[in-house]
Image (tube, rainbow, N blue to C red; front, top):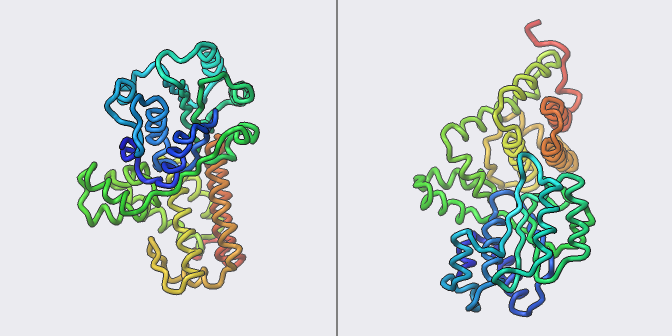
Length: 338
């Protein structure tokens, strides 16, 4: 029953229920996937199932004392570890180690949920690794992360890895209609842009978000004719003005995905409108170059999460777009009016 509270992820739900049914629950699990795909929600429901007093075939009962305490957020055997400021710090892991010296207070298991484990500082990550190498009994770690490569490989190797897939468009659309009272037609448009993320869909539902993305892509489309003398000032203004560069990169990544599929599938209907010059450039570009451009964006996103310089990151990406789509023909030293 309770797993229905978490959106989608039917394969992950079946796997987790089977672990509990067979009694083969690993001491550490890693939930990876893009933001807004239900990692936190499913971690909560899995923690409930582990300590449920009357579990059902479909999940936990939702009515026993343990389930009610979980729902109320005050179960003594569930520990939430989150970033303090930007990072998860060494003192937090040390405090966790101290608590793990004792048996769970009430339940069969103590469940430690570490949200956004990619924010672990290096020394905190090394301290966590020692806990995972010699885990005390009756303790289960649930780590959530955007991408497994953002963690120490030694931490990943000690976890049972569960990958979360993007949610179905119909599920995202239904959430927007029921939870946010978005009109169905607009909810359908937002769901297509959200690419399977409830977080992104909620963000896009705010006023002027889609208009901002439309203006952003007009800038990207204009890179092909932009001379070098105007290129760097434009990128500088963009980096200074935008409120969320990471969301901007997600928009560009979705646009590049359109380019790839338009190149490979004759009757593909892109999410975004592509102007005539971009369409010609896509048809003339090598597919490998388009895939490389997609990887450039993902690398730029990782760089931003590592606190890289915003302007330099954006400059590198825009240069890659200009060269990847238009090659040397996309470069002029001066504006046409000069």
